[in-house]
Length: 140
Figure 1 (cartoon, rainbow, N blue to C red):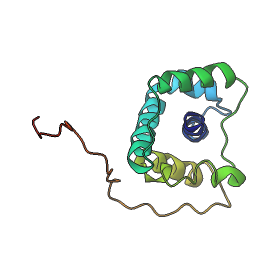
Figure 2 (tube, rainbow, N blue to C red):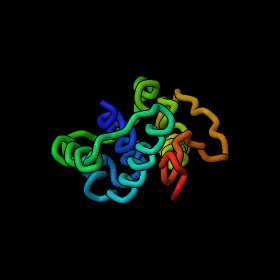
Figure 3 (cartoon, rainbow, N blue to C red):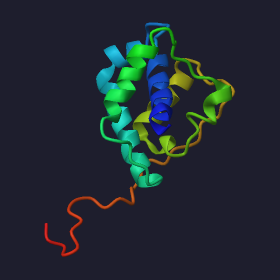
Figure 4 (cartoon, rainbow, N blue to C red):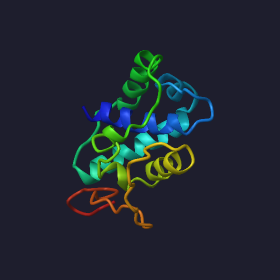
């Protein structure tokens, strides 16, 4: 479920900012792989630190595979009606990359005209996840 949520949120927002219109989900998976991969990994880290969720091993391949197989006829679009459910998720709005793309889509591409985007804090989200070696004895 969260993998599909990440796919729907990230790939649509990456697709609508492109000059080539309409961009499909498959186009994002095939031609904008690096940007999509960076955003998907950032979302994975935020889900782990914010909601204590971990996407299962191989999630990136499954997300890209779904977009390539089923997204050839699905144009990327942002809908005011769906904003609250897909892009309004507080986890995603903690991502600087995601917020930058979403803001660009609204201001430069005219997407989400009836939606007010929340103000994003300048500082990065501080994850509660501990980094590094988690051995009980503290030895690194």
